[in-house]
Amino acid sequence: MNFSIIFSILLYVVVSVIPNRLSAEQDKPNIVFIITDDQSWDSLGFMGGGVHTPRIDRLANEGMYFTDFNVTSTVCSPSRYSFLTGRYAGRCEGPRFLKEHPPGDQTQVENIGELEPGGWNLAKILQQNGYRTGFVGKSHFIRHDWFDHPEDSPLETYDKSADPKDPKVNEKMQRNHRRWCDEIKGYGFDYADGVYAANLKELYNNQLNVHNLEWTVEHALEFLDVRDAADRPFFLYFSTTLHHGPAPWRNDFSLNADPRMTGEGFLADRPDIMPSRQDVLRRNREAGFQDRHAYALWLDDGIGAIVDKIAALGLAKDTLILFVPDHGAWRHGKATLHDFGMRVPLLARWIDKIKPGTRCDQLVANIDLAPTLMDLCGVNPPANYQFDGLSFRALLFGEDIPIRESLFGELGHSRCIKTKYWKYIAVRYPPKIQKRIDAGELFQGFFGEYLPRPYLTRNSHLGHYAAKANNSYYDADQLYDLVVDPEETKNIYQSNPDIVKGLAAALSKELTQFKNRPFGEFTN
Picture 1 (cartoon, rainbow, N blue to C red):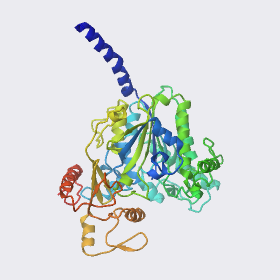
Picture 2: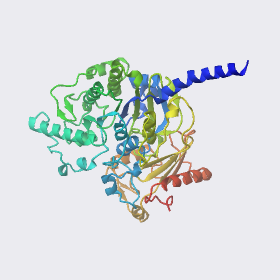
Picture 3: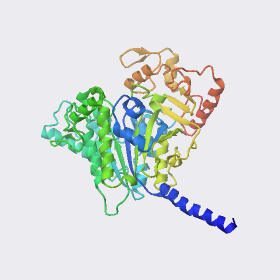
Picture 4: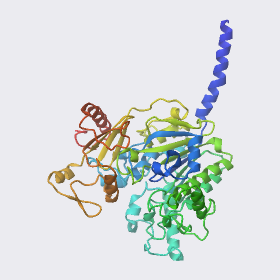
């Protein structure tokens, strides 16, 4: 065969294969980012959770399932901060965070993280690069001062026992909701509705302290229905209050609650865009599950309604759908750096782009989401945008190559380094607290009991259940073999000095990136 024939064959291969590859990677997708709350493996059917979640299971089958996706902080606010910024929550410069932790203090990362007013985040970058952006559902990452001290905010007050059906009370609730929506828009969202400022209790009303998935889904569909004249691609951030408290497995807080009680008060017309709540209970029973597990099917129906709307609009092949919990549940590793809090499933579906039924076992994290989506959307962030995360775009398209060797985590008074095989957790209290511990002072627990050490978090409720679920919670140094002991039940720190030495050095390297933020001997 002469050279010209060989060259022609090679040229044919190049021009026939490469364009398909490039189109798979360069088309700007619509993005629907679904983030749930406090959701562990035991509320997902495809993970063997003993619940009925056919639509979520189908998402897993139609796309890629990331088996070792992690959040770098395991409570709501800092996790969501990292998802939307691509930065560790310990870098936060929001006013509440800096008030609690002025420069020079050891940070106690938990639910005081917040998007910086005027700062960069994923939504704002996409908005400035031609995307129509929408926010629906739970926030918990802006204006902590409003829900910490509502009397000092522009929010109108009412009694916790007030009746939302009272027109005067309801008008206050609706005006408050509008204020929250308008405030969220300032962080990079063209559309904001169906908003919960934080958790349900931050509505400060007993009757509103119930989940209302239909109300949020209705607004998600409303956003999807709008196509502007420029036909811009869209980014929708959809955040559920499920499965956070009040306990959704108690149906009086969810399926048996009045569906007219919403985050904006009482609505005379209940949303009618999903199967009825009684139908959820019926189908759950027919599938062989108890009523207390029906909340999982209820969430599943909501996600199904969003997926079906995208299909009905003819956008299924143009839309990347992401599903991920913000961290594990309080029953497991929430408010700790243990894997049942950090490691959560990420599902990614993009028809004809991401191969269906695939798994990715590489170490990936929430800080990687923002750089990945900007990469997929062909967006270059501003020169002053700081990322801690890395793009995992190549993983989505089937390349099985690690993007990192280790991952840093931070929560309360603890920090960690995780690899595919090991996790090292260090607990270091600030000097003022450590002096009290050394002096034998006792610290009050959640039920009024006295403890030799304080919880790792300010929130004693979270601290109590985190300590109860993890028997090495207070240990200053912890090492776990994630292959032999994936549930991290045995601290093997003492018997593996060489492994600890390497991981501790890696942790010290990560911590020195946080300027003027001490953490024991690691930053000396």
